[in-house]
Length: 293
Ligand code: HBI
Ligand code: FE
Image (cartoon, rainbow, N blue to C red; front, side, top):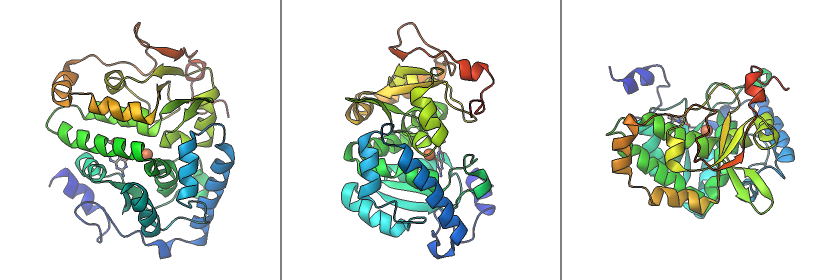
């Protein structure tokens, strides 16, 4: 059995070979819609002054606060008019090749399930709140939308090389946990931050983490944490410069080189890195795990 077949065996009978399933919006319970509303209201109140403006604009443009879990068809029709992206429902994390293929074709795979109310701040797999609230508003930004497609295409191309870790790190430090410079100061745009109340504050305000200038190759060589707040965040100048970094990179030779290159630990600062804030790492040194809360 291939890995994809193994995963498929544990999943719904109505799952297509590309791992998509019907959203089954009519099956959500009142409690599940209420969970969305609780998380939505909390984040929307918090985000002004933290989130980059086009994220906030995207929320409004796409009417994500209509009440309850959004219908993917309705949302896709709106989003497609803006940037050509659609949302497809998936029941789980999908295999990397499938994930890249969706992105390369401007389809964003979103979990169709939602966390339980006793676990509002902790999820093991990306649910509909993380995937829709966190990722979809910026897909209404034409430049970021192009970056996501470029990432998918770069990912597909990387499958012939041994650098999945590097691709995952790039996604992690940009799409999930990215910071951006604005005229008003640093702002958040990564989906993992904007969908988390505690990391929204931590990533911008806590003295603990490093905040370093984004550099594509540096980022791809950096380890990352999936179990706690990041120890380093990477800051882009603009979505244009983020996208441009993929245009300017000759990925074939880079993918050849990467597996042999040394890697950087989560809190490492290289002498030639451009440092915006040198973190104290106090939070991580104290044991982390939301110790401050
Ligand atoms: N599948 N549904 C889903 N969501 C993700 O964010 C995701 C995935 N599969 C692979 C993956 N992410 C990452 O490991 C890639 O960035 C490499
Ligand atoms: Fe995500």
